[in-house]
Length: 161
Ligand code: FES
Ligand code: FES
Image (cartoon, rainbow, N blue to C red):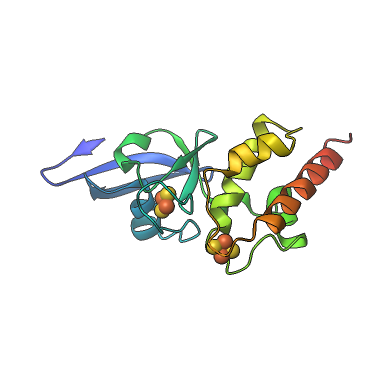
């Protein structure tokens, strides 16, 4: 990392690509990804850690990117919804229409992706526990839950189970 009086320059991996970015020291990961790099998939809403719309994966673990300083991801792997193109989870949300206005959707998908990587057999209790960190203001939870069930099926099919 190069540090200057009021900004820094550093590298990290974003959706599998190395990015080199310059930003002010107090910028959040959400702000840098959306406004410095230009990937707008993850949304800002509450900006205080409550809603989960901004959820990204950091080394595979969901984080609220509105609360994380971009400085802290130097050299690490960040994934956004743009990095999950054509994955079973994204496919399942489309098939089951697991969205209404769609504002929360990318956050739910990131969280579901992480859950299914660590708990491929997640039951209803595990799913509800994981989804508790995200809020859908349209209250479309039924469609989201159906989409996650479908994602489990698609992943099992891919693995030949
Ligand atoms: S915008 Fe980050 S948790 Fe709501
Ligand atoms: S689909 Fe509108 S906030 Fe969730």
